[in-house]
Length: 81
Image (cartoon, rainbow, N blue to C red; front, side):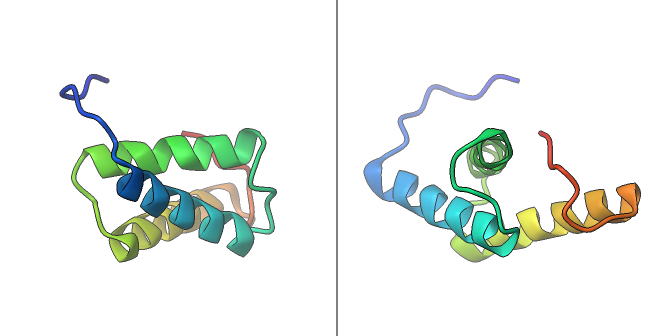
């Protein structure tokens, strides 16, 4: 998947970091490791597609967890991009 060349500014990176940490805390995940990296990658993709507010990113990632959790039959299933 290709995105237009773009630099992620410090304030944008701080936003993505905050959202990732919030999601990791909600899921009782360490903020480093494969699951956190998958979440961070997905959040960056969403951001580059135009979801650029904290609320929109949190909502999208929470909805994704719900869809994947329902599909697997268990809440807290490992999330992959």
